[in-house]
Length: 371
Image (cartoon, rainbow, N blue to C red):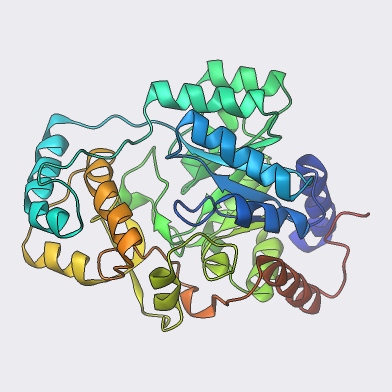
């Protein structure tokens, strides 16, 4: 019987070849942090940089892609969110949150009846995909669902590799059916929003190492492990469990190229293994964050958040204004359970450190593509 360890080099090199990279390491498409500078730095270091594009207008996305290309000729990816529809009940709860936040909005320089932020809808998503195609981006990362057939066929015809995110075995199978070239499995350790779309939150909190092997066997696709990856040893464990590569988010949050606000980076410097928990405050779906004053105030007031995307639309103007003002007590301090291991410095140095640690754990450089 063939073991995961025996197939490991072949798996890693196969994913590298499909993505056009030297090492099977991606940065997560972190909203507010994974801008052109971070994506370019990770790609230049041999991994696959991912540009967060979910909340970009088509023009902003095109400009961001151009800025990545100004910094590197290496392959990179764009990350987008598949649109979701809310409900009337969710809208009512979101409006209640908006009313509760009016004084805070004024304090941050917004109008009392401030406009809700834009979230990905079907029209915007279609326009974003056209930018990806026109710009000849080689890889697309999709979250919150599988692609509709009309989109999947267009991308396949242009040779774009789609990486679909999943939090359960069932969702991994959906991504396979939707034409994904590889599946990103998100463990409950991951920072930021939970990416579940087929199953409720209570059934979508599987630990990463319990998800990798079953997803790889059930789909027959390369699996990219995401959630709590902050050291080369954790990378190694994911590969031995059956992954072909890894996606790291929090590990890059404090880097020089990260666009995360300084107050967010500062909070990570004091994080411990118990600093994060799952809340609905910002996204309207579970998201792992470092809890701050805004989370506590809304919880104490017993104001139930709306669902995604309505709650996200309510909170985005507040979060953007808090970022401009440097108010860490009002930001969405997204972070995974590896927050205490996030290091400052250049993103390229993080890639190199993780590679060295991986090689020390597994013994050779055969896990990377040959030059």
